[in-house]
Image (cartoon, rainbow, N blue to C red; front, side):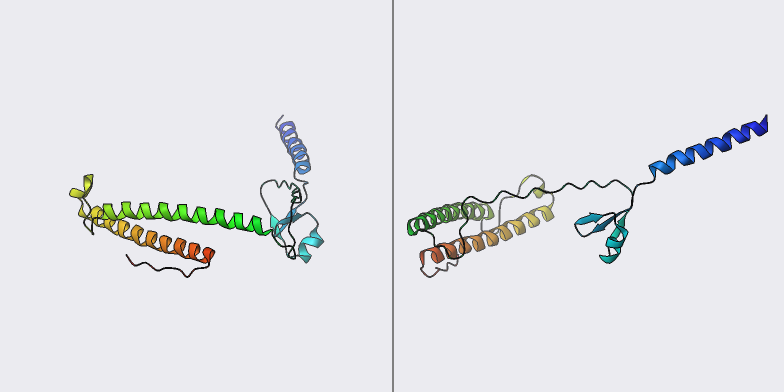
Length: 167
């Protein structure tokens, strides 16, 4: 009986190996930049890398529909359209400037000339207070740079020289 059992186990191993070889018979997949191929000669010619472990699904991208109104390099924009665009851009810049100036006023009020009021745990932990003061100062400096940039853009759009403000 032991011999028949060994023969049975051997035959079952052979059957399992044959069945699993059918599963393993997938082609090798190579990646060449953003392209994939299973052609060995093409992969060697393009110096592609073999992808191991996992399945690869490649979906062809759809080409975007052409824009309905495409201006070529030689076409000019209508003067009225350009004026309207410039006016809209200026309004946007002016609203951004107002928002940045309001934010600057809030930051300066909170900063209180370098001595903002201590909040909650900052009374017991001076390092947190020092870090918050440094963050406020950095925010004020960043906001000043933003305001100056917006003013330069407004001046550039209107054709006037940019006014520099030092606060």
